[in-house]
Image (cartoon, rainbow, N blue to C red):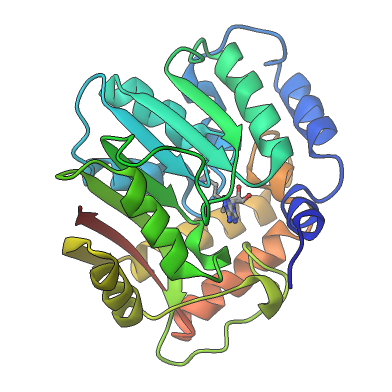
Length: 274
Ligand SMILES: C[S@@+](CC[C@H](N)C(=O)[O-])C[C@H]1O[C@@H](n2cnc3c(N)ncnc32)[C@H](O)[C@@H]1O
């Protein structure tokens, strides 16, 4: 059983506040008015960074002023990007309190607090009324969700009828046995991968329909290669995923890339309707 402090420790890897403060200061960005784009190198906490967020955004039918939920919002980078792009309102929830604190500071720095609000929460038990949102998404979160049916049921419950749910994740590949440690888990204790087929069956059971899946292995392999090679040539990037993920991020990324290449894992995006 994984408890809350194991989860916080896993995601924050020590004093994430100080690491972010130092990196922002080194990059000359502390206490300055910023654009949403200035934070992309540090606030998109998933493989392929902003490129993956842009891809997911292209598949989400969001209109101006709609109210959207981001389940497992991390530091709120994707939420700020979508809120600015679609002129919508985003409520993000995440189980890691430090990410919410840093994310809300980033909202202030980028003048996005009116459009994006982040709060602590658990995707398996959402603190919102039924049918509160006009759409929802979850980027690279579900790998950590043991009770996936409950997670999907909760997403379904808080969405209005006729709206969408989109998510991206690393699913279980045909060979199984991913190589740990990985970006989302140091051991199998925190990793709960499902095959694309099982994921689709669960979504159908919950009531989602028109389930569209796109496999993204090639994109992730080349994204990881780019990141790993850039960092090994020059270890001086000030803002990057390593600020949040700490010193083991590179090895965990290499393991993730190998796991995809060896078909142990299989990344995909899904967009479906309620
Ligand atoms: C790889 S990060 C992705 C963050 C963000 N979606 C992004 O793309 O930048 C995974 C996030 O899932 C969050 N998470 C894990 N389990 C969760 C749960 N049960 N409920 C809410 N958030 C969760 C973690 O705290 C972490 O911020």
